[in-house]
Image (cartoon, rainbow, N blue to C red):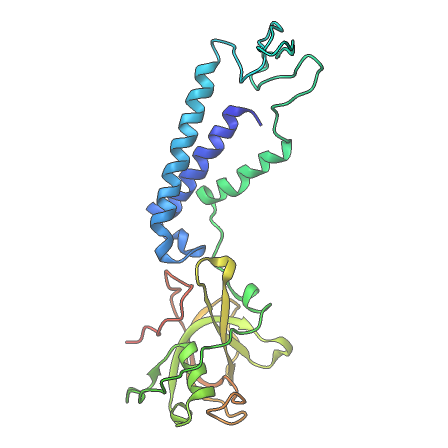
Length: 270
C-alpha cells in the first residue's frame, strides 16, 4: 500500500465516522448515543490527518527525495553508508534490493470496513447474538418496589418485569396484564419464543440481552419488533429467583424498530 493510499484510507475512515455520526443515526447500531461527540471529533481528526498526509506525499514528488537515507543516486546518508533508494514513489528498495517501506498487501483489506461505513453500515445486533448467550442477570432491587400504576395493560420494560417476577415479594405483577416491546428471538426446542432486548454499557462489543419467554402465540419472524400483551406464565414461586420469566400472550402486534435499539425502554402505546 503506497503512502498516498494510506492517506486516502485515513480520509475515508474519517468520512465514514462523520457520515454515521453526523448525518445519520447509523452510529446507534454500534455505540450508545453519548458517544456521538467523540465519534464526530475522531472523524474530523482522521480527515485532517489524511489530508495532511496526502498533501505531504504529493509535495515530495517533484524533489524526488525520500524519508532519511540516501537519494536515488546512492549518495551517503551522513553516516558513511551508501544505501541508495529507487524512485518508485514508495520509498523504494535499498542497494541490497530489500524493500523497507511497503506495507503488506493484506493491508488493502482495511478499505472494506471503511467503505462499509459509507455504503453499507452493519445492522444492530439482534436475535443471532441474543440466541447465543444467556439472559443478563438483573440487579437486585434493594429499596423495594413502588406500587404499580392502575393502567391496564401496564406498560413495562423487560428488565422491570424480570425484577418484579423474581424479586417482588408482593407478587403484584402476577395479577396484572402487561405490555412489553422487544424483538423476536427463537427459543431452542421450539418451546415458545423470546421477547428480547439488547443492552449496551458502551458499545456493541459489551452487549448483553434480557429475555422474556412467550407462550400461547405463534412466533413471528426472527428480529421482528413486536408489542406483546399478556400475563405472567406460572412457573416456580412468584417473587423468588425460581419464578419463570415468562408470559402468556394475549396479543402480539408488530411495532416499529426504535432508533436506539440498545436500551430497554417502555413500549409506545396509544
